[in-house]
Image 1 (cartoon, rainbow, N blue to C red):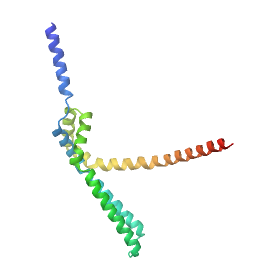
Image 2: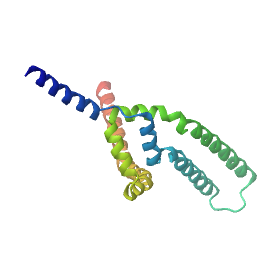
Image 3: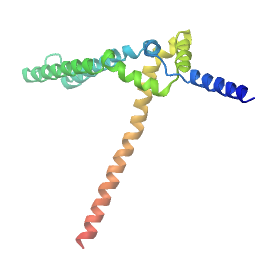
Image 4: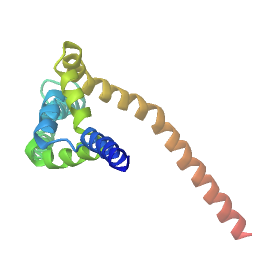
Length: 172
């Protein structure tokens, strides 16, 4: 009886251990590529380029022939933007970030979960999700920022008023 009970407990433990196995580097890498994580820096770089172009357009105020001083300022800004772009390429390089992603995924997912996600991202719906989620995430983040930023201003104002009231009370 003890032998049967021990065998049963061992089988349950072994099944749970197999189910909760740490995902392999290869499977996580496959998932990251299916999710488009390796292409995320390209999207961010494109956004930086758009921001640079929009900033230059705004600074030149739509004038076709800016002055020499304005041209110099624009050139300096564009050079700095290129330097930021190069730094972005260096920092967000997939090969550089991959070990960090591997650790994050290993802490959060089992091999079974990674396998299920790989299967999902290989479907048409999963491919659609991978293609559209970066933009959905960005727009969602922008929406939250637009709504939260004014609240931080309100908190700074309230803190400033409190400081003034405390200073006034101490001065009495």
